[in-house]
Image 1: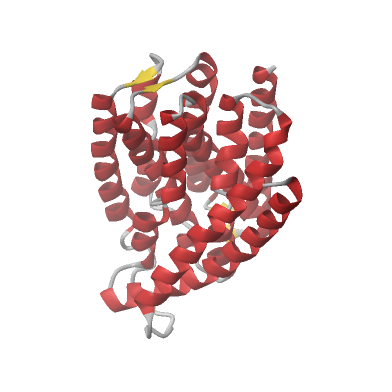
Image 2: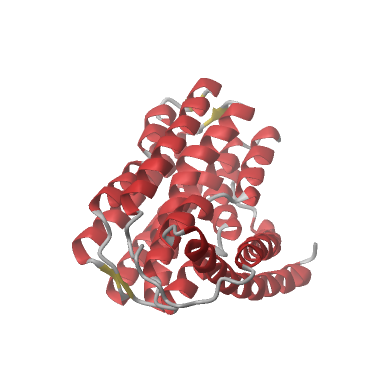
Length: 306
């Protein structure tokens, strides 16, 4: 794919994910009304199940690029907690009192990954334990936030609820793949290391559609869906994706990963959750602070690669 085609794919992917995010929100709300389940719980459960991210991690690790593979979930967690949350606050400020137990589950999600990865290797056994931790974390997070706006009825329609939900997810996945391919093509000519690429450009390209998943529901007055999407995806990446990648092939982590990318990925969700607990909002000031932190992360990552 040439650079020009990559740019076209990038623009087309952005258009698709914004359209799909709107359909997905409609589907979540409609299915929630039909099942009597808070859309927040559905968002937490479904948001992070992203085959493109998991496939990218498994494939790059199998091809002997463990630094890039680890970057798909480590860089993804950091990008979500700092970059996506920060940009979401800048684009569409939101106010929400997050349940403290839900915030705790979000902050603790990467802790086992940190413990297993500090020695430079995640074995198949540790991968299996991470998958079990994912199940526990998802159940805990869903229970902690199940009453968040659960009684709210916005009078919306429920016709074709499941079709809108599945259709939104499908188009969002396709748009995310197109966006990711475009961005990867554009950055491929920069000649950066696989670890830096995995934790920055690859993670951001695969997860760029997350911004639409956050900004669209926040703009429509559903901040719990926006924040639930971030938290749910963090739990998926830090536990399920990391675990599955290691189950397929044990993951070896290099020095930069264990000393920088891994600790930052473990700390970022705690920063995100603590900010929401203290401020009870994600406004432009909070968004700017998170963006500044992500900018500092990028600066250090580039410096390490040199």
